[in-house]
Image (cartoon, rainbow, N blue to C red; front, side):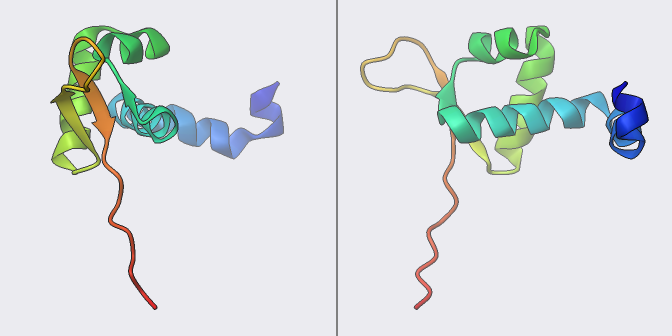
Amino acid sequence: MLETWLPEPVAQGRATPREEVIDRIVRRYLSVVSYASLPQIERLLEILCPQVEEAVIRLQEEGLIERDVMIDGLPGRWVVRRDPPISRAL
């Protein structure tokens, strides 16, 4: 039904590499929640840890997140979204 209604977006989605899809979802998720543990991201995506870990590494290399961050008052280590620099344009 969706393919009939929106054939081009469905075709684009199917042509998008899995790694890119995982990166996009993790990036979007962290833009909403700001931080999450790897197990939380794994449960969200229902995929195995190595794929989540690879996505987190790619996003950290892009400077979009920090991983293995300790947050005061929370146990464990976290994946944290890095905020873009604030523009000081007048």
